Image 1 (cartoon, one colour):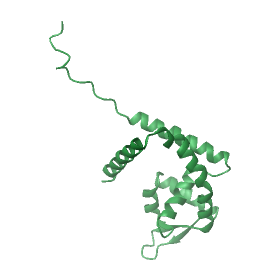
Image 2: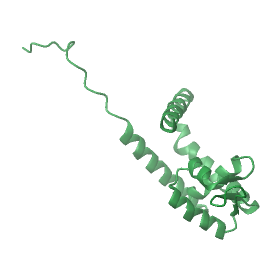
Image 3: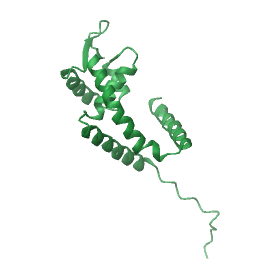
Image 4: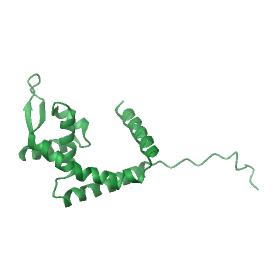
Length: 154
């Protein structure tokens, strides 16, 4: 018989949800990408940039602000904005008070594309994510993720 009772033994550490979080994110984003492609629409990163610009209020953000608003590395963002600009969805404007800085500006065509993409994206969010969570779980998860994001940015 063990000298330690089960009540006095240290508890096993709870495994981190990090691997499940990363896997769920990758799989869900992949499924959203499939739906956008099937609808003849561009990739999700295009939506993310167009939506960040639209929700900014003025339809424009400095490139570093845009990088902070989307989940794309700065170097990938520059290449993506180049592609969006070539398609007429975004324009670049020089910043008058800082010559090294530029704004990414949403064009009317970019706004129209973002609005065309939303119904496909919204349906995917509902079918792949929201419908599998109870309202209380969605609220709790939103709070947890907001807390993690605040700590990471803090």
